[in-house]
Image (tube, rainbow over all chains, first blue to last red; front, side, top):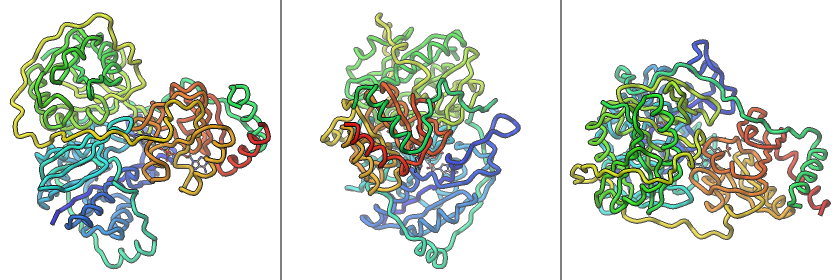
Length: 255
Length: 319
Ligand SMILES: Cc1cc2nc3c(=O)[nH]c(=O)nc-3n(C[C@H](O)[C@H](O)[C@H](O)COP(=O)(O)OP(=O)(O)OC[C@H]3O[C@@H](n4cnc5c(N)ncnc54)[C@H](O)[C@@H]3O)c2cc1C
Ligand SMILES: Nc1ncnc2c1ncn2[C@@H]1O[C@H](COP(=O)(O)O)[C@@H](O)[C@H]1O
């Protein structure tokens, strides 16, 4: 019976416009839309549930108490997660060093065999929570993982390198893995199933210890990169744009 | 304590990764500001010859059978010892499958500050990091006493980190690497593919904007009409809509076609780093602020689904 813990992070949605606050050194998150670190955490949750289905065990999903956390947790429950936890703290000011220390204090009590995180998020300035957490707990870490199996009391993980090369690593239990992709695409759950999960499962709330922010660099200013160049925009109706593109293809010698 | 800049060289199966040279170039710039030396740190086994073209003042070579290929536990142990002993001003790692497994762990273990996703340094030794998918840059003073830094490509050319003269190599002690919790069992080669996108002259690339598997057909039809091949960004591949061999980006292939036609791709750094060698990038995106428009030569601010079928027809008629 494997005890699997998955961390779900909430990040500002990049589709929305990002603005820098009055200090000039941080993002203005007043109006940010918080979404799950979806490219990776959805995969971490999927990988956890796949392992449970294959090898038995329980999946606990932990998220910080930000707007949107309930959604993320109940969606995980609808997919098969057993235990849902929301951690209370002032995460708006936190960095990943602080998050890792705070979460490690909570997770230690669960005596997990396996902890899964997303491989990284787009707003990290002080490293990734996965390896920071692993070290806080004194556990081994492997990131860029796209497959986890349990064999003879050890984990066999697939670690991705550029160009599609995979390294198979053998790792002792317990361990922390940063998930790049689950073995199969994250399952889809219907909204009705999520609604049902809201009725049948409950979220436990826990308090994080005081946040220790040390280990992160100080930011003096943030800015939007000035593009060295900008594309020449082709305007018009779809027909007009198509004609311009075809002319371009001809000019470039591909038509 | 020294003012030297250490660069942790990345290599796999006898091949030094480009990011290693990018970091040597970055270290050169940083070392000017700190008045220190550029020291390449090479971990390996019978791998001394990998150092021959490093643009470094010195190479520290750590040889051990357990360092022959990268594993996180062995690298962490060897580097923890070296960094605490030498206390350089900064240690540069790649923000890669190798560096990201090591840098954060060492930050926690040694109690040293970490700067992530650094793209370049200023002449005053400030770091500039790239976050939020390339939409935001963050600048700050290089933290003390020893800054651990993970670097992304783009700020320096790998060629700037190469030298025709071989640097002096000094062997450095390796601590006992026992009871390792992570070991390499084997490499698995990429699946062989029907096409090699790194060699194709015309690529029709689709991103998350394509919305679902069925819509891939629209890109296929365009590719067929024009004589190109369909490839994709990571989310499309991870959804299983196209095979892994079609992945363009940091974890996939680097491409250099005559035309890279990107539809519904935002232009995240992990994608863009792999397409900058293209002759002409053309991007279609509904978001006028999408970073892809900063690397594309031509852009169309339009919904894919309003454009693609008309474009396919127009191409067919033009033939
Ligand atoms: C370690 C690591 C490795 C990675 N490796 C890779 C890699 O190899 N390759 C890669 O691609 N990514 C990689 N990524 C992921 C990368 O960070 C981005 O998340 C990814 O490239 C985004 O893909 P996208 O542009 O398709 O999706 P999004 O960023 O979601 O962008 C979708 C775009 O489509 C536009 N759009 C939406 N609907 C329409 C429409 N109807 N018509 C026109 N436009 C529309 C939107 O405006 C948006 O700009 C990696 C990430 C990490 C952390
Ligand atoms: N505040 C957080 N709450 C929960 N999980 C987190 C948090 N920060 C990071 N993580 C986990 O660590 C992964 C990588 O994020 P990051 O460390 O920010 O790159 C995320 O995908 C989560 O799994």
